[in-house]
Amino acid sequence: MAGFGVLAVHAHPDDEAIWTGGTLARCSAEGARTAVVTCTWTAGTVRAGELERSLDILGAGEPRLLGYADANKPESAPGAPRFLDAPFDEAVGRVVRHIREFRPDVVLTYDGYGAYGHPDHVHVHRVTLAAVEAAGYDQLYPDAGEPWWPRALYLAVIPRSVVVSHWRAVFGADPEPGQTLPGVPDDRVTTTLDIAPWGEHKWAAMHAHRSELERGASMTLLTALPEPARAQLLGTEWYRRVGHTGPAETALTA
Image 1 (cartoon, rainbow, N blue to C red):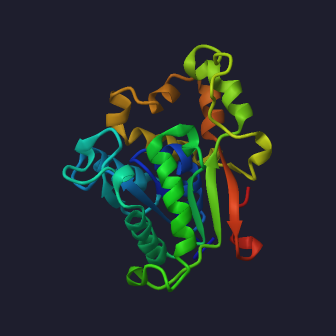
Image 2 (image 1 turned 180 degrees about the horizontal axis):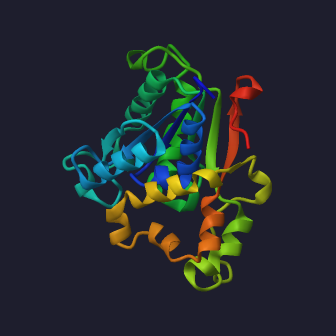
Image 3 (image 1 turned 30 degrees about the horizontal axis):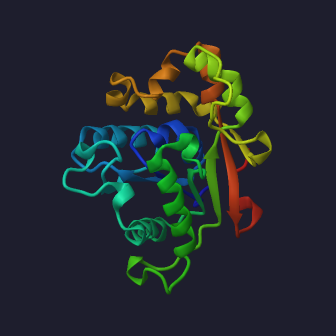
């Protein structure tokens, strides 16, 4: 994978580890260039420092922070607008700049539901789709660098069967009748990556976000899982590929 570039675009520090950590670690170990754009939080905050440690574990370079505020945490970027409130074209242009600077073959981000409906995740999906398309046009964002067409876009997903089979282990009870569940139908998953050899890297990167573990965030649920269930969840990452313009060897492969 020498020379191959993978750029992930995420909402918050810790998302890079939870959703794409194994993919980033695997690609880096195989010689690819890897990087992460994080749309919220700003340099100098505790979580930005945790992000730096996580990226070091995953081999994904230095933080690329857009510096917007988390939807529910104004302390994430004092004085800055929430990512949700920033002008759409401004946010797209800032992601375009990173795409043109890093020049990735593959871009990773969330699916249209933001994996589980978080509004920042959903907005990152919309902004990233627009940025991946815009980055190749010299007519758009001319001050953001030389145009670049990423060859493929992968959306991080969870197969619905995996959600259902692990729901009780994670939450201690079966889902309520009619409850909206995260995940996509299994036949919508196009790429299943075995990242088990890099599972410890992913787990360590998640633990770099100590402030999230200490406050009992959703990531904490994984720490309570029995080891076999946790190993299964951490050993695989799933994607839906939605765009491809290059030769087959530029795609992520199982």
